Image 1 (cartoon, rainbow, N blue to C red):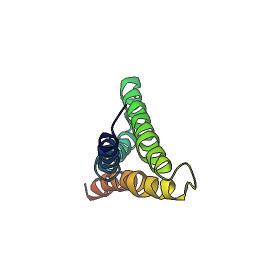
Image 2 (image 1 turned 180 degrees about the horizontal axis):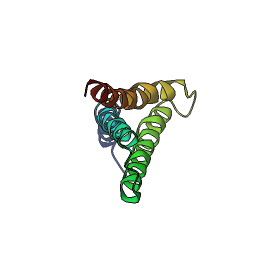
Image 3 (image 1 turned 180 degrees about the vertical axis):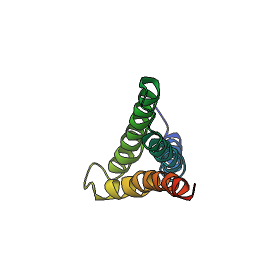
Image 4 (image 1 turned 120 degrees about the vertical axis):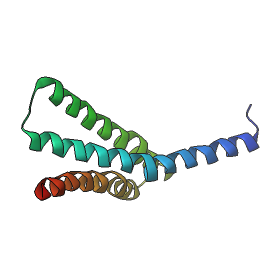
Length: 111
């Protein structure tokens, strides 16, 4: 049996881990995924090894977004309304992805 104090401590660490992923790891990773996706699309080099790397990188970003951002926020509210989870997904994943994508487009326009 887990004492109450250890359960509360575990819950605090889970919350800290979830917030670290949502506010730090996910935005950084999706910024990089967006950047490399734009690089792939603009390069015109569509070889199978390069395409498979981008597909795997994109799938990794999708899984991270769903499992560690969307579901974490949905579970925090007890499985109720998905509004908070969708907002977290947009701010932590979709906007950084778009910023990374647009960053490479901007660099390409300059060059």
